[in-house]
Image (cartoon, rainbow, N blue to C red; front, side):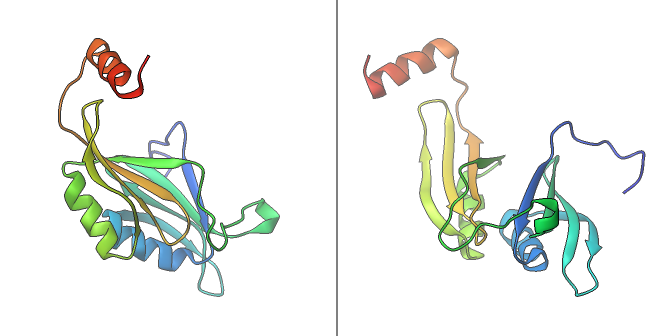
Amino acid sequence: MSATTNEPTIAVSLTVKNAVEALDFYTRALGAEELFRMPTPDGGIAHAEFLLGNSRIFISEESPEWHAYAMTGETMASSLLAILTESCDTSYKKAVDAGAVALNQPENQFWGARTAMIKDPYGYRWSFREVVEEVTPEEMAKRAKELFGS
């Protein structure tokens, strides 16, 4: 990291039990590019950063002294990380093949996107979205009304 690096206005920071394993998973499943890693003496990761497209994501291992706790068991994050991709189907298949849990298969949505959703091994939900149609706000409202009723 250098002082000249463009810092994001808001940075997402993921907390996991094993950040070394998680970085490997995100590289294989999502095409992440690792930027920086600050190892701990025991071989773990105190802090690392990776890119997905043009978005920087922070990751670290659980650290109670920093109020950072990983999800446990079957817990699933309430937030969703949505990735704009050129091919929803390809991204979804790559993630599932790498070990992600399929939540929603690729499907065209009324708002003009094709989307799919997975859960990673650490409890985070990721959505792949591909723009398949430009939809005006008026058309989107019309389609939403048809789908959900008035």
